[in-house]
Length: 238
Image (cartoon, rainbow, N blue to C red; front, side, top):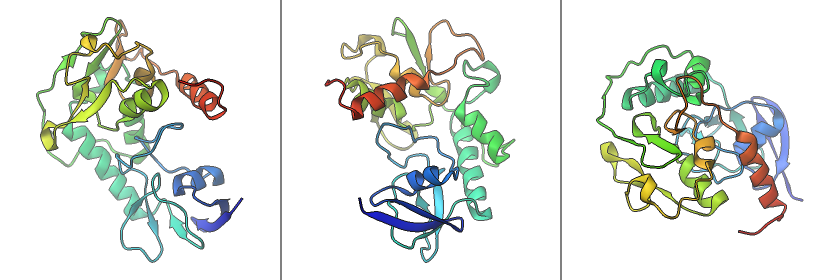
């Protein structure tokens, strides 16, 4: 097995060639913040929280989609990166309608946890207060577009683990939206198997189980990890 050697925050690391910087960091026990990454599905570099500095490269690069290279020197937690990450989280809060006090995921939210981790207690940017809808047409679940951060975990887990491809990304810029089927009410999409994987994958309270009260909803990530490992071992075919 070809091996690539590099340093991460000054620590020598040897990983399988073709690994991403994020995988190398996880193997070395170095935490790099992410919101769009989900073990077991493909990475898309959507949230930009995993940006790292690489000696000799002027651009910041997303660790989840950047492959390691021989003798690469990676820096994961510089002052510049901390400032960028705080800015990204501030923009996420100002772009949507994230009122934690009345959210089903309050206390179990990865965006909320990220804000605490990065020391973000307010946003420097003007809140946009977009007019977004809530779709509760599905008999078991609902989606509150106000809390969506467009990480696309739901899109990828539905496509790559469930094979249903109910979710997709539509429109651009301020009109960007996660849509079900052909931009239909979720409950009208026949392809949905009601498996709930998108609910477990969502990092915020955007996709929720009906009947969950404020701060009550938790995620069963163990189910996704079990399915991902079983798929890699070829224990079933879809």
